[in-house]
Length: 66
Image 1 (cartoon, rainbow, N blue to C red):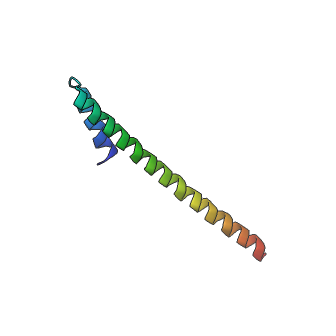
Image 2: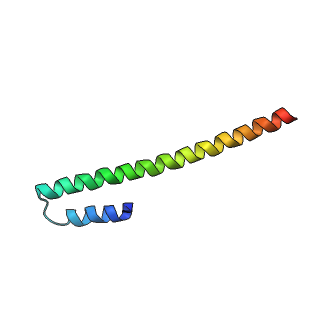
Image 3: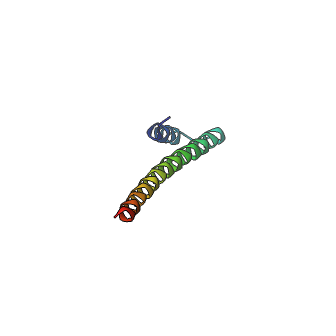
C-alpha cells in the first residue's frame, strides 16, 4: 500500500464520526505509514552514504597511485 493510499484512508476515516474501532484503525495506519517513511528515508540515506564512501575510496586510491 502506498503512502498516498494510506493518507487517503486516514482522511476518509476522519471525515466520518470516529468510533473507538476507527481510532484503533487510524493509529495502525499512521504507525505503518511512519514505518514505511522511515524505511524509505533510511534506505535513501544508506545508499547515499555508500556512494560517498565509494567516491572517497576511489579518490584515495587515485592519490596513492600518483
